[in-house]
Image (tube, rainbow, N blue to C red; front, side):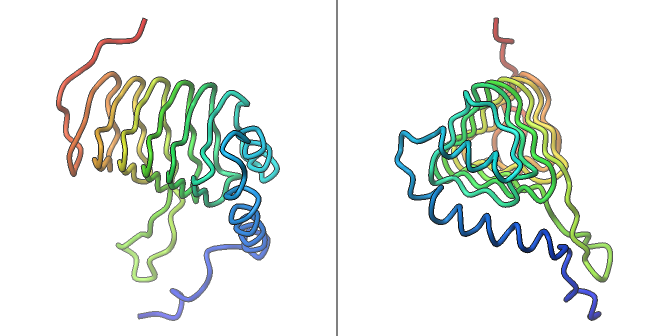
Length: 179
């Protein structure tokens, strides 16, 4: 094992911002009233997130590195959702991310003996539903209108207007485009 594994992948500025956000998230964000959605959006925007004011973000959501989060109109993050935004996470319009779903935009290069951190993006297109407890891994695009079933794992791109479930997620059937 090399000593390089102990070298941080984060700059001093990132470490400070992450610490400050952790404090804000654990207090002002987490203990805000259920109806104070605008307050939570304000806090996220204060830390660089790009979020439309029509979004709904539950107070129990956990977001790492909010400056890498972008959310379009009328999208929702349910209770207990984990957004690990080491890489950019882009959520389009009318997306529903149900309770306890996990989006992970970071991993390590296990082919390199030093296992450097990889910050890979996740893209969620319009009209997607990520059901309860689902997991979306790094460098995945979830196509328009796709559904990822409860407790399913997506480690590769999901086709538009297709329903997936399982671990790994497999196609169950297609669905009609929304009017």
